[in-house]
Image 1 (cartoon, rainbow, N blue to C red):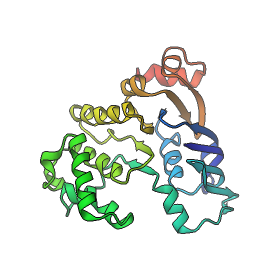
Image 2: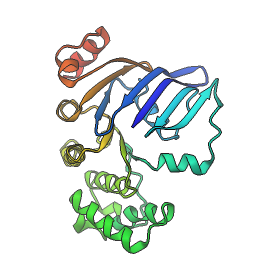
Image 3: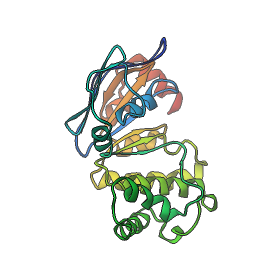
Image 4: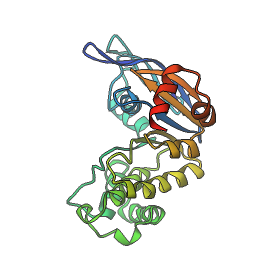
Length: 250
């Protein structure tokens, strides 16, 4: 579903991603862990064209989305082609980014109506199903300002799912939440994993990573240092840097 080949990303002289090679299979849940500034969020943003890579290739569901060399575009894809490939990806950010002047229901229905030209009735029906899924059907007519942070993030997940993506990307979705609200968001993500959604999750929630991930990737200073099954990474990490990181947070 996802393939990155020899991906590098620089901001000026700062190398943020260094020779990233990554594959994610259909239905796999991959959690990316590591210290702040290790390139985790940039990796995610490179997958859906929010950041343009400097070198390498990015494939989404078998289609080449991005190929660049020395910061020059080689693919020459049209904006329509890029949009079509990126529509396979749903993304949930640290901040909820909901439209404050629209209700919960309007937030969830807006993108399918505008981007995919889905009829309003069909979009509304599906949005109500999604709000039921995330436990917020009773909040459909509320505005974001009347919701807790956990509720807003669950709306953000429903909004991403409304586009019917094949892959979900989560960029530290609980980092902006009060501790008591974290579990309600993680519970929704666990259900998605059980349903077979392909997911890449950047997270500091090690308990979630242990329980849900098929594979853990540890990043530091723009590189993938180590990857493996949760039990091997958490119980028997091979790399010194991984051991040092985990010893501080577990």
